[in-house]
Amino acid sequence: MADAVVLGAGSWGTTFAKVLADGGADTVLWARRPEAAREIDESRRNTRYLPGITLPAGLRATSDIRAALADASAVFLAVPSQQLRQLLRDHGDAIERGVPIVTLMKGVESGTRLRMTEVIAQELQVDAARIAAVSGPNLALEIAQQQPTAAVISSSSGDTARAIAKLARNDYFHSFINADVVGTEFGGVLKNLVALAIGIVDGVGYGENTKASIITRGLAEMTDFAVAHGAERKTMRGLAGLGDLIATCGSPLSRNFTAGRLLGMGYSRTDVIARMEQVAEGLASVDPVAELAAAKGVRMPILEQVRLVLDGEMDPRDIAPHLTTDDEPIEE
Ligand SMILES: NC(=O)C1=CN([C@@H]2O[C@H](COP(=O)(O)OP(=O)(O)OC[C@H]3O[C@@H](n4cnc5c(N)ncnc54)[C@H](O)[C@@H]3O)[C@@H](O)[C@H]2O)C=CC1
Ligand SMILES: O=C(CO)COP(=O)(O)O
Image (cartoon, rainbow, N blue to C red; front, side, top):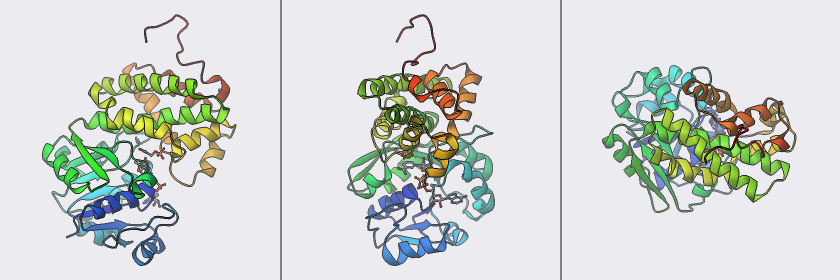
């Protein structure tokens, strides 16, 4: 049995497989395209997603998903959020009973508005104690370059969180644990939306005051939303909240920042999607998160303005002054 099987050989799946393999885990990475699996196995490279990175010799790749799953002691999921349900529907039956299932993903499903751990529980009919979510300030390329980084592994089961945290650590990557799955997952989803906003104002040409204002108010919005959905406030100040917000909003490596920047430069939603070569999860999360916020009566003016820019109903230059939609001053 392989210690870990990672599904999805994009930038994060490949990087996380490297993290696991560098920590000593016998790891198999599933790539949808046979030529991608071959490149990883034969050249120790994934040039499309991780240029310049040499992958560890111990990391094996395959395009045979069912054989990989049948041999897995733990399964890690790293495909775009809107694709997860179909993948599990097609191949979830190949996963052995009792195996922990870990999402590395940062999105909600449009339509159902479900978090990834909820999609896993629903589609595979597995107990929440077997499921974990990984989040944190984890820009893939920096980790692939072995720059020191921390993440948090969240599960309702302390045993599952601890087991995954022990697997996902090495001399450049450290995993903490928590039991706040709702907050940990929503942290990853919500920071993408703030990163879109930061990208937009960067594309417009605004500077650090604007960005700091949006990041600070964005964290307040994230916290209101997450707490209304049952998260712990402190999770939003941790790696999966503030930590990831800082990394994602401050880096041109972020695809959400990049997508926002194109919007700020005047490209339409359709143009931005066409130009992105990797997934920018925030683009698909805007509407379901806005719906979830409305259902709980949570006001999210920054998210609302990102939505208006995406829909072509607001000039990107107008986003910054509208950090609140209130006419009367409100308490910070
Ligand atoms: N790249 C990063 O720095 C980080 C990404 N994440 C999250 O990880 C998840 C995956 O993102 P990335 O790897 O960055 O995306 P990516 O765009 O680099 O790669 C996505 C991978 O999924 C595959 N894929 C696409 N549709 C598929 C389908 N229908 N069935 C199977 N495979 C499919 C693609 O071929 C590709 O290998 C996202 O939810 C993202 O938010 C989380 C932390 C860091
Ligand atoms: O989640 C990430 C960093 O923690 C990656 O952000 P992007 O998806 O915006 O690239």
